[in-house]
Length: 551
Image 1 (cartoon, rainbow, N blue to C red):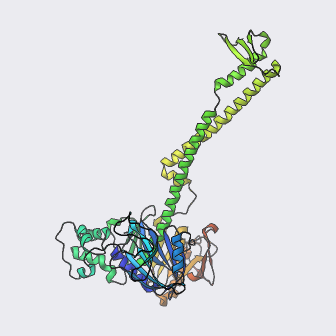
Image 2 (cartoon, rainbow, N blue to C red):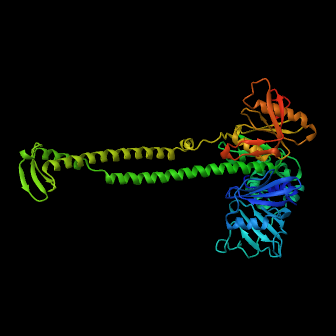
Image 3 (tube, one colour):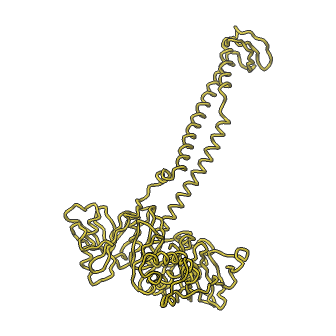
């Protein structure tokens, strides 16, 4: 599922609230048009609560480091900044099994009578909304990301100054209570029954239960237990599925045909999985936005070129008119030998002897010029008109070539991608490699620039970062789940960093190691490089130790 359903949201809230509760809000920024990053100072160190309000991915995640974003610009963004910055998160809770999260915030820095506020995260897919309200009995709304008028929704309005009305709730069974004594539904469509009767189950989880019921020996009871497993077990494995193009398909804790993909990443917590989902979704959406903008620009260019071609066609002189100028100059050259039929103040009418059947030609003459000078004027006009025709034809040919290229690009999306600005290799199958050490720690390896940025962004402050010195190579992160065996794993991670570098075939390679909190990432415009300090250097032989297990 890409938008978490109620049951999955319950697990995510359980993971996040222990760290987020009690955190002091230091800053509110906006990494993209649909995201909010709330920087927290917690007892676990600085954390960033990243909330996505995109219709295709409405979810949140607690990131180990702050997300860079833009300062508030819109009225809604300024409202959030005013009431949240300086506040403290008192509670972080889900409303029943709904896809709604209440974040209770106490902000004593405001010069107002009421200092408690509630930020409602309505993570409901295409109707996603973020609402800020006072923590009074009526829950008076202060503002919302998307205001809803009575004309838009007759059941529920979301406007400043009126009481907050939660989404309508349905009378369904509690899934945990039902799972203690499950009974097989006497229906053919298990997915439909789960969707109608079990709280916290949306279309995806209901279909997952139906699929697992057919696949597992325990049938419906075992399938329900597998789906509810994240709520009953503290540890687990959560899978993120990506398409061939890098589009996030969703997250789940079981392999399922509902999210069939060759690119699957596993994580030890749902929060880590959703953070990865958020980052990859942002990259994908930004690329899609750039691609759509490029198509829009191409269509605008096509319209402009078409108009320019029409203007040129209107300005193109006719070949007959150009040749007539030359003919008049030639006739004036032999004027004494011509039969002049008529003389007027504007010019003369002569018979053209240069054709097989003589025709009459009127030649306009300037009284101020002699016949020879009039002849030179006609030849001059002829040359100018011929040059103008050549220039316009050349310009038209260039525009036609541009038009053909644009039409080819619009008809062939792959050609469109190849003309875009060079971007890093984002083949998801070779993006991130994970190894597990014998002690249970994990070594993460980024094999391209995109994966390297993502690794550093997702790493905790106390994790260890490795990179070969003075040579190109992969960024390597050692996730220190078990600090007591850290020394052996640091040496293993250094060997892995040397193995995935340009010094792979050298006898010994120097590898720099420091904790993530001592890293500073330069902007992407500056090459996206990493500055580090307090590093330790290891001289190791490049290898991938056999005791490591590929995750």
